[in-house]
Length: 270
Image (cartoon, rainbow, N blue to C red; front, side, top):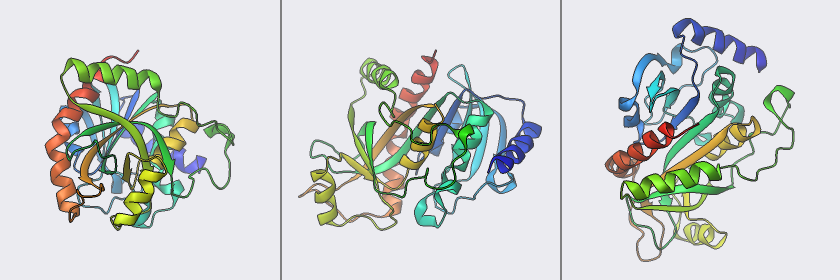
């Protein structure tokens, strides 16, 4: 894998001289944040050696380099999912590449279903921890260059960044929750019984992404911040028929609030 990463890095350095400090992974319906980036380079996934290609509607498939909040950033407009058939090392490959490009912070966003009865559709939830029901991306051959074989998973989502984001949301008068995100395989949306189960084991929201990237980033010493847009509810009495199109629409409607928080949070990085 190290040789593949070197090949990818070599190609990217030929496309841009921007050395990012912040990485961004933009989830379903949330790609509009890239419009806030002072773009230096846009590179299609299919043109990047060894990169997977997103197959999901709402995930455009571009790596974007530029400036946001006064910091050099690289953004994934579209991510990869286990349910697409990708292996875990393929899903997390871009995060490994970002680390070797020099990022110190990783911001992840997603659209998720809320199982906390206090949530409403369109709410934002800062991820303070996760429950992983996907295969662990660290299974397999270990490369010391990536970090510890058995990484401690405390403070996986940076408490410092969470506190700053809460203060920013309060200043901007944006309602925000904190909670536990549970990652499942998908692609089917959950049954009522599964929603109930997720709530029983401590979940506040459930989705099909984010956790593999976070685990890999944390192993490599990258400080992570995750945020979910609650696009549908898995709460008894509030469960409605859900489609991917509905998820995209709700995410887009809440994107502006998420963008304001992330921009100010990036500005506050030291």
